[in-house]
Image (tube, rainbow, N blue to C red; front, side):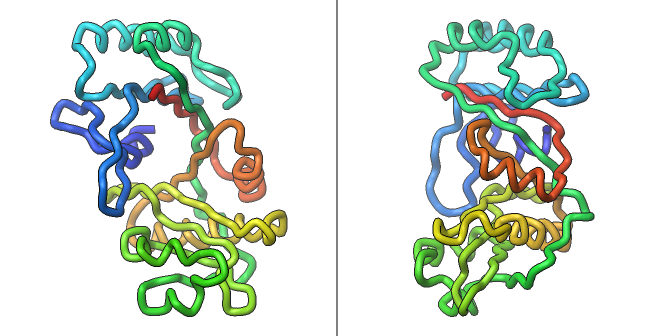
Length: 225
């Protein structure tokens, strides 16, 4: 969970959240609050730099009282208090997974780079061309010389990468997403980092990929915007 939050957001010297850690140019403010609950019962909490210290200390006490999680659909014990204290309007939540070494693609996948991107990024993935140098590794499954499913690094630190997964709508439901995630994880390990995969609690398609690859569930992330 420490690796996960480190990959998701930039932090200042006091470990306060600053921005979303997107690898491409531009800055998006971080949420007010991040809570990571784990299957071991530990919690990781982070707060945006502009929250008052007294409020932060109050919330830390609540975070320490969160139980372990076994079901990613279980909301935080102190959800109501968090929302009230931060005057939050909405929250996000979802399961977090480690991709094991055993995850291997069974279909042919390719690495997409600046050198070969024009061969593959057409017919639906043109938008990725401007980001290709930043979101590496980028692994694709190609049908008819056209990328139809892609997994790439969308949050990057020296220790861990977070997966970003996209499959063209007409090619969904064929198992391609699991193939590119497995190929991407292998490429991330080859550069010496740990491949992490997370999604939202309502994204059943992404959860299906996690089940197919038997990813290791380690906790649930929760943010208040």
